[in-house]
Image 1 (cartoon, rainbow, N blue to C red):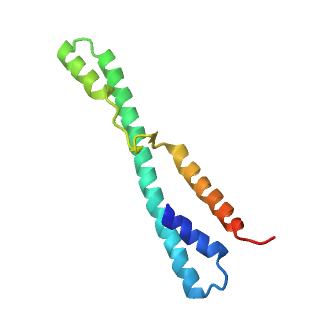
Image 2 (tube, rainbow, N blue to C red):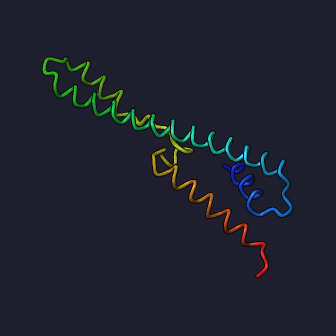
Image 3 (cartoon, rainbow, N blue to C red):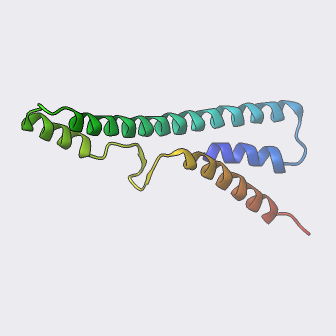
Length: 119
């Protein structure tokens, strides 16, 4: 995210940009944005699939009547544990994180970019 921020900042607010520099920074932005989105989207999709699997197993344990108590308790133990991708165990990866992080990146870029300008 930091590299994405600085590459975008350099493209937007640097004076005297030649064509080669502009192309290299554009490739840097595309690379870092795709890498960030790849990690966030895969983590989000994995968390959604974990939640779906957990719900399916909970429904399955209620549908099967002749299941023994040991298997039922094993299912509860295995699926009551929290297995999710998080950001340092502070925030669970979800869909809103993608738009929030890109919005924060844009906002900080605008704030830092206008900080050095004279009125």
